[in-house]
Amino acid sequence: MSTEWEGVEAKKPLLVARNSSVSSIWVVVASTTVAVAGSFVFGISVGYSSPSQKGIMRDLHLSLAEYSVFGSILTIGAMLGAIVSGTIADRVGRRCAMAISDVFCILGYLLIAFSKNSVWLDLGRLSIGCGIGLLSYVVPVYISEITPKNLRGRFAAVNQFMICCGASLAYALGTCITWRTLAIVGVTPCLLQLAGLLVIPESPRWLAKIRHSGALEEALQKLRGKETDISEEAADIKDFTEKLQQLPQSKMLDLFQKDYIHAVTVGVGLMVLQQFGGVNAICFYASEIFVSAGFSSGNTGMLAMVAVQIPMTALGVLLLDKAGRRPLLMVCAAGTCLGCLLVGLSFLSKEHHWAKDLNVALALTGILIFSGSFSLGMGGIPWVIMSEIFPIHMKGSAGSLVTLVSWLGSWIVSYAFNFLLLWSSYGTFFMFASICGLTVVFVERLVPETKGRTLEEIQASMNSSLTPVSNGINRPV
Image (cartoon, rainbow, N blue to C red; front, top):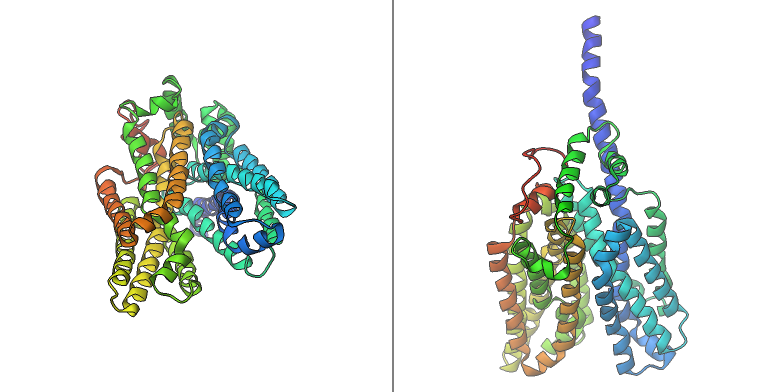
């Protein structure tokens, strides 16, 4: 009898550990869900202008040039938000930074919903741009700082998945509701995120940066479970952060010093290659590309493209922590290269009056391969890596730089694409294909594998002036 009782007693710690693990995962899931509500806002904001164009131009009597200002001013606002994103997130914390971005987005959508002329419309769009410029930095950073190392990539990739879902929802709803109602819909996830921010924990690493040890341990305990021993992880975070605090606070120019140049090259390089690989050209002008390649209407191709994006993004979320960042990124870059090459061949075929069916098949196949490959990894992985490689004392300035480069590249490609098509339609896509091919080489040569490593290990390996705080490779983070 006593032996059976002892056996039951011996199983209790294992049962407690399992329950603790399950409860801690749910806290991380809930926190990530609140954070990616901002990503959903991002997606709705990007997808808003396309289905709303006819209604806004008709109701407010806008010319095409005036509506083009409305569409493009989002990127200007996002660049402004990107410039201050790191500073705001470092000074007030990750949660407050997300709350500030929500206020900008709510204000912007309300200005659009009740606008009577183009001035209020543009001010609203600019305000939304500032909000999503801030969100595009702080959401992946917050997720990477709260998640365990074995799940970090998967959770961080949900950011891109929700952007894709938001854009698809805006495109779908925009076909059946008015542009003013769609603007009100954009307010909803902002309000939900504001409510959620009241209950989720702050980033433990940011709390370590501002030397709130008690709050750090409390937040970490919530994220890892009540019964989990967090002493080693908390000590590692504090020790590594204290080492960084002894270094001078980095400014923008300090990022180009020898110690940081590898991380900056990887972060900036991935964003440049991502944007100049042609993603905005294909996303913003897909309908026109299909028509130019010989389709009677762009709607069929657009629906096929949207149908590919969401499942491929979901697949990327599942694969990221299994396949690793580097292999998946190289495969996806090769896929975008092939997609651009096929689209270029479709325009070359059209120019030389080859079979029309060949033009259509090449264009559709190329854009679907590009969209699938970009959604699988090229869209989200650079943001995941950006959130992992920069030490906490330089994350603000480095993150602002990387986010600004991304939005600046987006604006340049969107603005220049029509001029490039006039120069050479097939040459434009062959150029994009070359850049995508260069991305494979860049990743193979310079980008580190971050799967299964703590943030402190990743950052120490890329910075010659830092050493890992411990050799506890198997510690939970």
